[in-house]
Amino acid sequence: MISTAEADRLIGRHVNCLPIESLPLVQCTGAVLREHIYGERDQPPFDRVAMDGIAVDSTAVRSGARRLRVQAMQAAGDAPLTLANGQHCIEIMTGAMLPTGCDAVIPVERISLDDGFALLSDGAKAEPWSNVHRRGSDSLQGALLLRAGLRLQAPEIAVAAGAGMPRIRVSAQPTIIVVSTGNELIEPGVPIEAHQVRRSNAYGIMSALRQRGFQRIADDHLVDDLALLRQRLRVHLDTHDVLILSGGVSMGRLDFVPRALEELGVRKIFHKIAQRPGKPMWFGIAPSGTAVFGLPGNPVSTLVCLARYVIPALYAAMGQATQPIEKIALAAPVEAKAPLALFMPVQLSTDDWSRAWANPAPTNGSGDFNALSGTDGFVELPPGPNTYPKGFVTRLWRW
Figure 1 (cartoon, rainbow, N blue to C red):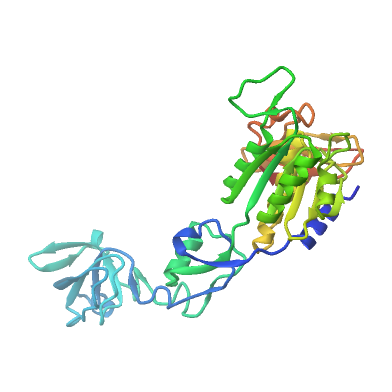
Figure 2 (cartoon, rainbow, N blue to C red; figure 1 turned 90 degrees about the horizontal axis):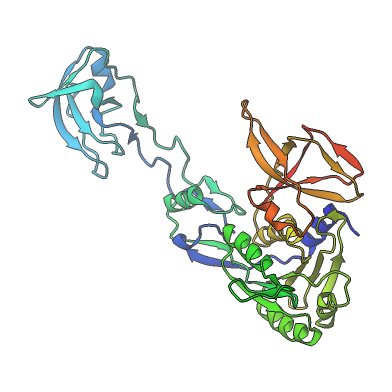
């Protein structure tokens, strides 16, 4: 068996980087950026008015002008007007370009309008550049705004749009096939016998992938038949970037998946990780470059291995920059009995001092997927035997 760290290293070394595609900006949410985005113009691109009110010459106001003739009104999107003199003002709207000759804005709450004049209230002041968002104060033309490797969410999409990018270069979505194996599996909604179980793992896997923005997902169910496995897996390997299998990778007489993959030319990179749950995990690479993740069939093991290894590998294949490791403190002691890394499901909470805690939520074995309901993820504890006390800080993996 290899360590969890060695599994990370081997997966990262062998998973191929996905190709780049140019997509319209509206289709890029959740994608990984594969080019740098630079500023089209200064931001703001002009001295931008930050409040509704009147634009004035601050020197005139500070010299005693309190009753100013309203020369005109300028809205956002209008070409800038020019102030006639310091005894005039221009009614101005938020987002407008500051008129020529003005260097301050007095908010509408500080003035009253009377027969074409603006009267300043007591205490109204006009300091140079007050209520004005100065040109280039956010960023300058040509500045690096977004670095390749970012996963694009709403703020990044808005930045790219502001930089004038109708299309951007992003990593192609991987084509993923989720395959569950086992004679005992029956689809939800279909009549079931006492000796059968529902096909739940595939639904959990696909839900987790879609939750993270992966869209090109198919699924299949194969019974424990070596010839059928070879036939169908050959097709899936030829038509997908990633193959995720659930079940059939342990040491039983009917666990045909490793043998079928070997006969199809898939090179085994590793089989078994020193962890609990999920020890039988299998990983290999097909001649086509398809990455194959063989996850143990027990539901808790499946979801743990998916979150711990598969999803980070998919992000890495899309070119996402390395993310900071999320850590959290245990809210109660946890005993690790075996010399294996321990993945403990947890519920997250915050105390009265806004400190985050991981509350252990142990399952009744790796088949007890009902116990995962309401949990937020799991913590990764070092191999035992050891007891990790309350306050022990360790890695957190979210579902």
